[in-house]
Every structure is written in C-alpha cells, then in structure tokens.
Length: 137
Image (cartoon, rainbow, N blue to C red):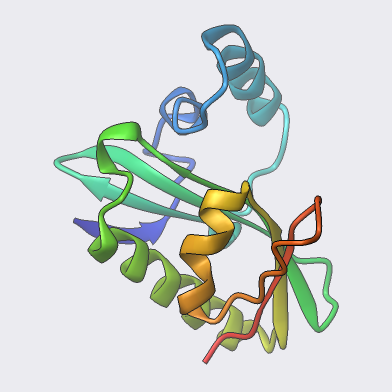
C-alpha cells in the first residue's frame, strides 16, 4: 500500500471518481467536472494498492487556520482496514502540519463519526448534523 498525492499526469480521473459511493451516472458526471477543474495534487491524498487507487482524502484549504476534509472515499473491499485508515490519517496530519493548519472540519455519517472518535475527532451523538473537529498531532 502506498499513500501519496494524486498525480493528474498519470492517475485516472475516472478511477478517482469511482472511489465515492455514488451511482455510476454521478461518478461519470463527477469525473467530467474534475476534468474541467485545475486539480491541486496536494489537496488529494490517495492510497494505491497494486497500481489501483483504493482511497482518497480531499482537502479544501482556503488559506485559513482551518481546512475542511470534504471527502474520505474508500473502495468497499478496503473499508474497515485499520492500517489503511491510520496511514491516511497520518498522511493527512502531516500535510496539515506542513500548511500550519490548526484544525479541520469534516462531515460524516454517525457510524463513521463514532469510528473516528478514538482518532481525536470530536463527536456529539445528540447533534443530527455531525460536524467533526479534528486537531492534528
């Protein structure tokens, strides 16, 4: 398993769009939208296994002391693998530390929110919209 930045020169935007849980039509529309955008590689941390993209963390950084993790997408067969989650979180923390980011926000379904709580993500189960604040080490 290799954790790295997305490379728009050699990586496939179609493969990147397939990492989310949307249906095929939405994945295709997303890939087409990505083709029209300037992708900033260090805002896209990917995991590669055997030459295939298997996970993605998307960072939205507007130059503030915080950033938003807009998506964490993992192929179904790789979900629940603690080692992969830990490697992605370490890469994310390292990138945020380089940028001087004090904390991040993200959104998550309750099951993911509960799973991230031991990883230093704050979580309030009584809030119907879960906004998680995370402070990188």
